[in-house]
Every structure is written in C-alpha cells, then in structure tokens.
View 1 (tube, helix red, strand yellow):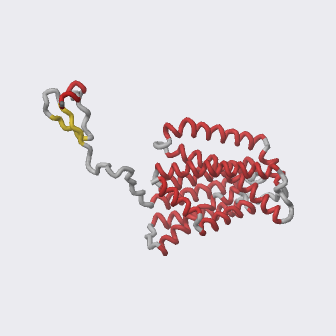
View 2: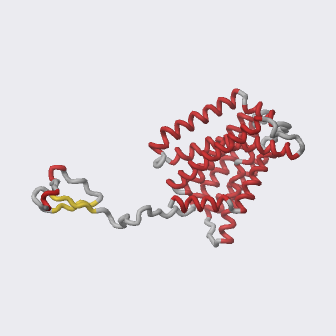
View 3: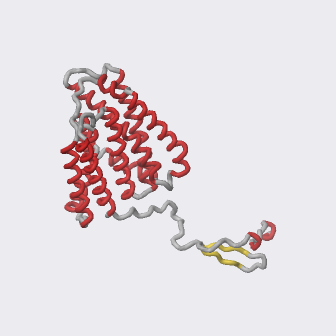
Length: 304
C-alpha cells in the first residue's frame, strides 16, 4: 500500500496541469504580496468543483454553490483591500527584511514549535489529533512561502540582467526552501494517511493561510501604512473565504476505509475462554472480559 501511495504521489507531481499551476503560483508570489496570493488559492477549489460538475458529472449541491459564492465574494474583498507590493531591487533587501529582530523571533518560534510537535506530540498524538501533522505543515509552510518569494524575485532580477546568484543569501533561501518543502510534504502525507481528506483540506488551508499572512506581515510589513478599515475588510474577506472553503469540503463523501489486512474479520470479534469447570464461555467484542480467576491455563503437556 505504501508503494502504491508513493507512485500515485509521483504521478500527481508530474501531472502537466499541476506543474503549470505551481509555476503560475510561483510567479504570482513575485509580483504580488503573499497576503493577497495565499487567500486566493481558494479559487482553485471553485474551479475543481465546476470542472467536476461538467466533466465528471458530479452533482453540485446547494451547499457547494453557496461555498463557491462565499469564496468569490471573499476573494473580491481581499483583492480590493490588499496592500501594494513593495518594489525590491536586490536579494540583499529581502535579506535585510529576513534578519530584522521581529522576523528572527518569528523564525525561532516556528523552529521551536515545530521541534516540539515533531519530537513530542507527533509520536504520542499524531494519529489521533488532526492538528499535530497539519500544524507542522502550516507553520513550516509560512517559511516556505517567504523563501519562494525571495527566490522568485532573485530569478526575476537575474533575468532582467542583475545576477543574484553571486550572493550567498540567495543560496540560503534555496536551502531553507528545500528543507521546508521536504518537511511539509512528509507531514502532509502523514495527515492524509490518517485522516479524511475532506477534513484535512479546509483545516490545512485555514492554518496555512493564517500563518503565511502572519509571516508576510512581520517580514515585509505588508500592512504598514494601511488604514484600520482596509485591514478589517481584508480579514473579513479572509474569513468569508474560509467559510466557503469549509462548506465546499463539508459536502464531500468520506473516504472509504482501506483494509490493511486481508484477514481482517468483517463480523464482530468473538473470543472463547475456558472456565475452571471446563465449560466454554463465549465473549462478544462489546462484553467485558471474564475474571482472570475463571481462565484456565492449558499447558502443553496436557496434549501429550
């Protein structure tokens, strides 16, 4: 089963439409602030729902339509009140943003929380608490987006004639990006293996968006100079998008259970114990186990 899941993941990654979409997403982070690009990712859910309706003949329910409308309204509000992108002329400028005390404190907090979740919470609660794996993906994902933005701007400036590969800061951003992506994909796959996709997707989208906006606001000071009304309006738009996303995923059918063992019984378990008087005593799965004093230990020499 693990090999099949790995193969499916590889095929999905090399799907041309997925590659084109990720390239477009990468370019968007170059020309627009993360607080604008990340929330608009919900529009992909709308496109998926509409295409599934026309191509796969999946029925759009009333809640699906309402969710799409909420996402569209929220996205419009976010676009109208989003901050303007800062004009950056060098990776060194981005590096100055990254080493300011506020963002260094945020990065240290992210590393500390991630280590706590990975080393302590994941082994104990990872398979029972959905927020453990998703929390790791979301927190690390905020640093991923910051690195993607830095590398994207570096590539753009290099194409325009200002080579950014000569700065070691560019390669630090590359190493951070690779590390964060590996960690993020690993724990996202673990979350999808243990929990329903319809539950994982909206929670991951909400947490990832929230941490990305927080990281971008700290690093690039996106909201500096904006009025209180614009900030509140954008937050309301974000909440509207999150509500629409939740509605869209709430109508999905739950994943069918995967049988990990071909010999797993389909009927309720029944256990047989031998009492001290030799009479069998039958126990159903919901029954309490018999007292230990009633169980007779049958030794091997009785069968000789």
